[in-house]
Image 1 (tube, rainbow, N blue to C red):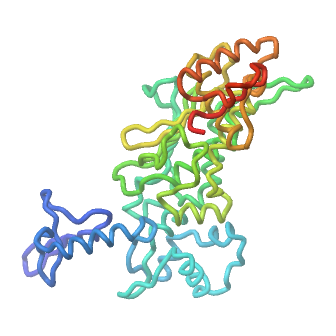
Image 2 (image 1 turned 90 degrees about the horizontal axis):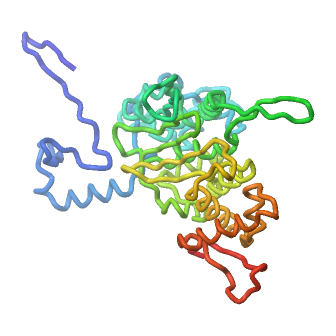
Image 3 (image 1 turned 135 degrees about the vertical axis):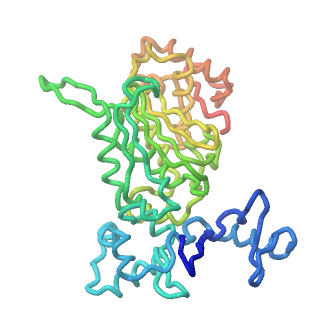
Length: 384
C-alpha cells in the first residue's frame, strides 16, 4: 500500500504471519522481539518455542482471513450449504449462524474485533477461493487433452468453490467430460461411463483431502486423456503406494477429513482404495496405478482393455491388487478368482497360472501353503 504524506511517499508492507516455517529474508530467519526485528538464531529459546508452535498448529487451524465483519463472513462463506450438507435447520438470526460456524471451528472471534476465518472454513465453504489469497492455487484444475500426450489441450477449467460446498458440482462436471462406451443389451443401445463413477469420486476426494497444503504454487488436478484419467495432488503419500489398499486410514489434514466424512464424501476408514480396486475389477478394467513423484501423489485409471491387450506389467499388477483385495476381505486368491477378475474361461486356466507365476517371481504374491495339492493352491500378498 502506497500513501503520500507531507509530499513524501510512504509504503506500508504487510508481512504475513509465519506459517510452517519462520519468516526469511535473503535466507536469514527473523523474529520480532519487542519493537525490534532480530535474527532468530540469536534467540534459541524463542526459536524452539516457534517450531513447537508450528508443529502443534495444523493447516486447518491457521487463519485464512483476519478481522472480517459479520457481513463479510456471511458474504464469503456459503453458510446455507453448510447447514444443508449437515441436514441442519438454518437459524432464523445472524448470531445463530455465526455461533454454529464457530462451533465447527470454521470461524473464531478476533481479539482485535470481528472474526477470523480459518483455513478449514475457507477451504471447505468459500464461495470463491480467490477471495483468500493463500488458497487461490488450491482449487481443483480439470484439463482435457486431445490425445494421449499433454501437447494439445481441448479444455481447461479451474474450480471456484470450497471443497465441501462444491464437491458434488465438481464430480458432476468431471463425469460429464469423461468419454463413454456404447453397450448393446437386449436390442437397446446405451452409453455408459468409461470409468466407474464411484472410483472417480473416491480418487478425487482423496486428492482434495490428503494433499499437502503447505506446498506452494501447486494444487490438485484431474487430467483426462482418451485412454486414461490421472488425478494428482501435492504431497508425498503417507504410506507406500503399493500398500494403499490395506493400510489403516491416515491423513495429514484430519479436520478436513473428519468434516468430509460427516457430509458423506469420505469414510475415514481407509476403504476408499478398496472400492476403487473393486470397481475396476467389476468392470474388468486394467488395474489402477498409484505413483509418487516429485513430491506429488498420482492415481491413474485406464480405459477398457481386453486381457490380451494388457501387457505383462498390467497383468501382474492386476494380480497383486486382486490378491490384496481378497486378503483384506479375509479371502485367499486362487486361479479361479483371478480368472473371474479377468473374465477368462476355465479352459484357459493355464494362462492365469502364468500370470500368477510372474507375480510370484516379482515378489508381489506368495503361495500360502506349499504342502497343499496344486489344485488347492492359494495365494496371499507378499507382505501378509
